[in-house]
Length: 374
Length: 187
Image (tube, rainbow over all chains, first blue to last red; front, side, top):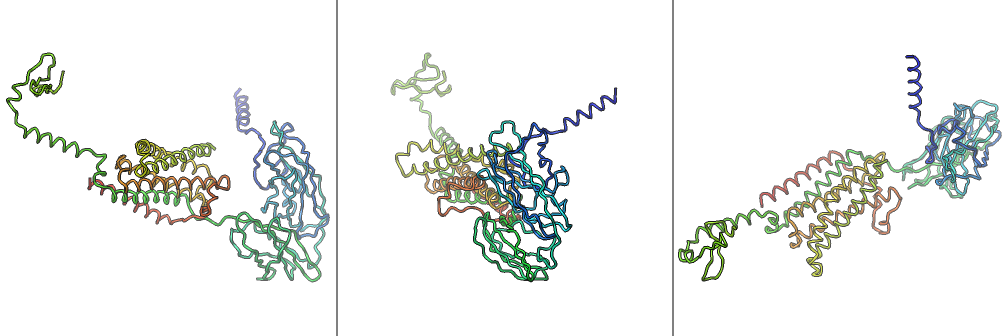
């Protein structure tokens, strides 16, 4: 009996510990993910549907090992949700684990958003998207497979389903790099972003390169410009790209040459980030309180300086009351009782507390009683 | 999540009460120069006073909710500026309230005091407008005040060293205490 209760308790605990699986209509951000729906728990058929999108992948069928290759993914016929968000996976397999291209020897030099992720989220335009990854080809020769998978929402999606699309394997034949073939050094990656206004050169490391030419252009431009390249060490080059401001992206293309070989690489891009800000939360609070007190002190000083005396006491009526009390006392002490006056006053039973003055024809408060008391 | 919603609500209240404070204080100041407004002086004074108290309540709430609405409240110059201008707005609003409390409604009859009070209220309102403009820049990327050619974007900020801030805080506190003591001794 005890063991049954224990088993039921464990099952109940496990059931309660699970979170409900929901779609992620706002996206989950770029990251490194395996094939299994990017961790969005869309494996349940009731939660997902096949996408109507058409996915085209463009990658050279034959590439040289340890060189760069561009994987261009074009997606059309997309039916996305309001925000137009599409999640795109670049995969080395569809096993559900260890699907990252790096698990198969590829290295991502740059993803479509300027990062180093195999899963990116982009916003579609006119129901289509075109993105590209720049990869460093594996060292080992032979054939490798590349897969692309997508996930997105839909405008009419009352059940919050995820729409999944995927390609078949795209086979890439990797051949040995020709002797002295100029290319990028293994492990080199493009900078993701530069600080706004920073014009410091970027460093490129190569192999078998005799000369390096770099062209740059701003994102969206068609014409390109040649950048200044300096050799600073053996196979290490410094490229001067103009500083960028705001959210501008600058693209550059490296052409490495050695004798008769010239390796024109894919366009890479660098984003622009805001300048480093060294403010702290405590500093902001202290500065804010300091400003409150400085302003308050200054304004109160001004008020004190310009306040006329009469106004200064307008809210405090103590002196007025005191003065009236003093004057009343003086008046009482100086005034002698006039016996003739008081003797002519007539008491009235009808108006207790009051005395009738027949000369002045007026009622006067009886000083022996509180004036006017009934 | 609720901090964002609450921030939207309380910011609206702060902006509304701050605007009422500034406009009513300005009109109350004008009553000394425009005879037609003389009869409304008391009403304008009271409205401005009440609005300034509401502003003083809502501004710290707006700061607090704004602090919890973003992941890194002081991580960029534009957010840092919100702290600074909140301090400026609270400083001027508090000056206005203390001035009104110290001198009563008679202060509008004395031009120097009336000028100081009117400027306190208007500077408070300006700081609140700048806060709104910065908030709009953060959420919408643009502000209605961008139409002014001289309106800064507040993308940069003046960060004062924490020790200097602390020194300024102590100087400010001393000047406040000193001002009150002068008033007490002269009263």
